[in-house]
Picture 1 (spheres, rainbow, N blue to C red):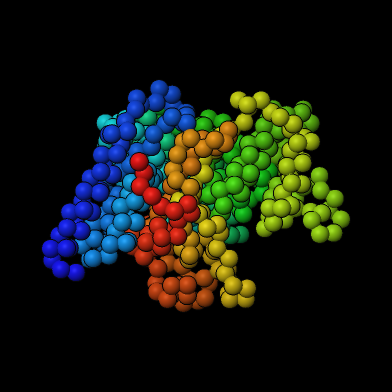
Picture 2 (picture 1 turned 90 degrees about the horizontal axis):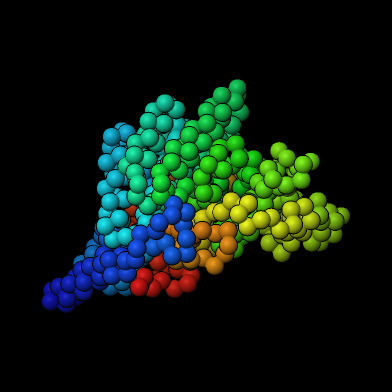
Length: 424
């Protein structure tokens, strides 16, 4: 490419990104007056995101197509993760973000990710050194938000991956699990004390815990003190699968707390993506529920129809769904390719951006589709349990968890379903 052409491309890129940065101003509406997300809620776009920076790099390198895609990606709202730091540091960082969003009358999405012992000391290990330290950190996080409008997703995997799930020797007495539940409940209560903060406690994904199990954990961890729960964070399961799963969870929690007297406390009786007593379960094809075959999930729907009917609209917890990487659904490796766990959740190849972030979902219980996992950030150095250090799907050592990975960002944008366009 000739120098003059390169300059023109760079100028064009800067113009595009400036327009993206101005988007929140030109479309600004009155800030929400309620703490709960409504269809009118407008989410904050960071004009200095990693995707915006990547767009400039791509254009300067003469990579026009990827540059355009990164500019498009940068025009959409994405969550900001807070994963470490002292209470003073997190207070300042959170306050700066919510102030920038408030200036343009937008609502930022924040992720609190610092619970002690997070991720079973795996790819995203870390977290506060103690419950006391974590609670001070959460206090500071909430103080940083103050009276500003914000959406907070609390501790991805923190509830779905409890210390008791990390192995037989991790928490033999149950003390660590009890502390985790108490810490999560403290976080939900403290953050929700903000007058305009919407709080969603992470609940894993549709191919993880059975409905009744995650419903019980949500209730134990104080979901009732917040606005609801979050699904599919950092995962690729189709949006409609998550929506169905979330609806079952909401109904199960209602069944076990507000339903028939004999059901009180019994989330374990709820049908799930794995089993439904409403099905014949007689061994013939389609007679039982299979988590891998949504065509059989009508048996789970049938159980809830029979046992919960139609709960009052205000009696069910709402939820949000991460659609940042689910445009092409979940990844399934070729049969027999891996003898161990292929880590289908970890930097899954060939994925694409999913439905665009919005609070206007058209689904009564779904408050928003969000890009919670930042598109283009690595899940960690996945090895597919091959015993080496290289990820065989990419032929390289993947970047550490949370690190920016341009090739992955480019692929997600290129494979987006629906096709990636500018947020206008």
